[in-house]
Image 1 (cartoon, one colour):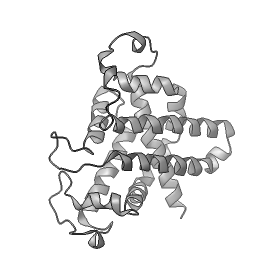
Image 2 (spheres, helix red, strand yellow):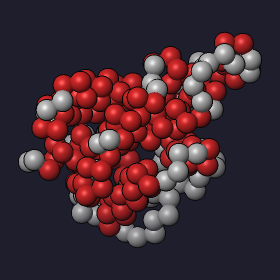
Image 3 (cartoon, rainbow, N blue to C red):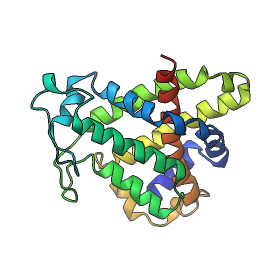
Length: 226
């Protein structure tokens, strides 16, 4: 937890940020199917990210397309993945924000890498993960800024947009830790500046969860208005 605690403290993410994003959470539940469609539409818009789905995902035993030209978002495996994503989003909205849930979030990040701890051999290179977060940051900032609910309250709008920016970087780091090794030296520092930090597990977990809330809200509202 030390790494997420440090990142949350450094970017200044606190309980007021969590509240700002969680206040918008009720808008997400009915948009979950739309959010799943939006995510896969974006991933399918580039062959280099689409080709990942030519490999069999963990837990799927059905038919897989043999090439990119034959693959669509209506394929059995893609529907299976959308279903998993939808359940994941619902869990983010309803789960307790505790240490057990942090382990679940950690697992979600880890299964995108070629680790021996999972059955599939899928390995998503970090450049694609980072590119997706960059796209989401701009996309969601624009989408959230235009929401009527936030337009009516400039203070709340600014708080949500600021919190979103912080949380996207926290969420990005949650993936980056499995690719970038230049932070491993921090593991040896169990005392010192980290022991003096004020944020606790609640802030860290809340940051990870609320980040996905914000991502889903922006993607869902943008696609729902098309």
